[in-house]
Image 1 (cartoon, rainbow, N blue to C red):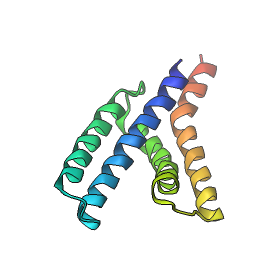
Image 2 (tube, one colour):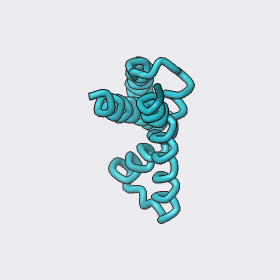
Image 3 (cartoon, rainbow, N blue to C red):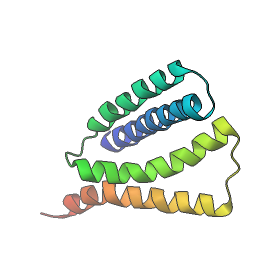
Image 4 (cartoon, rainbow, N blue to C red):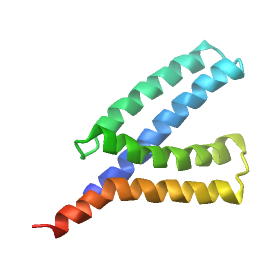
Amino acid sequence: MTTARIVVLFVIAAIAEIGGAWLIWQAVRENRGWWFALLGIVALAAYGFVAAFQPDANFGRVLAAYGGVFVAGSLAWGIVVDGFRPTTWDYVGSGVALLGAAIIIFAPVFTDATEG
């Protein structure tokens, strides 16, 4: 249950943060209107709260691991929403970032389970 909760919270956080940043981008760079920026601010605030619900109590670890999710999620957002066509190196980089995130967030769990 904890692993599923961690993954779901990271996905929700990614949607909120990337979506919020995209909405502000649309308001500023694409002149889509002030209400896009307002919605973006709300989404970015929601991201902060979602991240706080991670079961790990270490802020730095959670945000560092989320960085890997953000890298992959940003590319996925670009593909789905903006029609971005990633290169092979984009996919490789995303995989490395996700592997790093998994090591950061799950290694302590595996280590603690095998110790004492």
